[in-house]
Length: 248
Image (cartoon, rainbow, N blue to C red; front, side):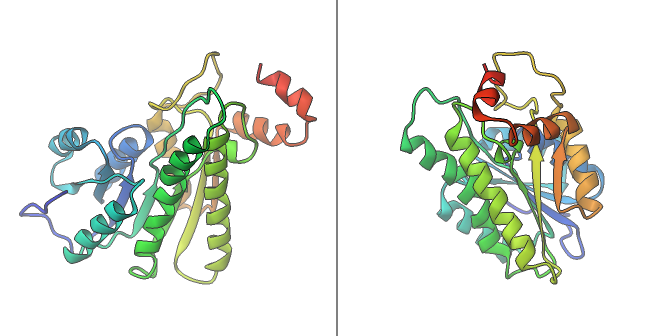
């Protein structure tokens, strides 16, 4: 899973756990936080990719091979970290999956929810009582505001994640524990697929920089870019037939 190298000082460190850390926004977040002096626990399925990042980032990056769709993997990883007295202050629950749907299949929904929803909230369950001042950041999507065609599983799972974190944020409003929801528009990650040329598609590093800036300013909901934020909110007030023409 991972090991703690000699020379790594844990006491009084700023520690961040990032899921989906092997690429995209997760990798960019890790890069920026390490540069800023954080100890980053990078969680992903791809052990080889994590190993390469470890070689690049050095002792301030702790790779943890974990499939977030499996609750036991999350539990085992969390127990390992607690035994080593590695208690994250900040969690970026970023791992996600999604495909263009050729038809409607409940198995596709189960897979999407295991990764995009339970793959985030299982970390909350594991750590909520172990750090009373932790910040949990869920990477949802603007499709949680208005769904897109042929992506019912992805849209539903991201909408569920958004609702869950909004509820938790209200529930813990008077505590030191914070719940932040991020709603990105299109970002050039491995998941990004479009048959059309879209405007205002951000690079992962730009998205990560924006997210960190807003998180450290204490924002509860973070949406970007403004073009796509307005686009999805306008879709909510349009008649369905008119909205459907936009997606053709």
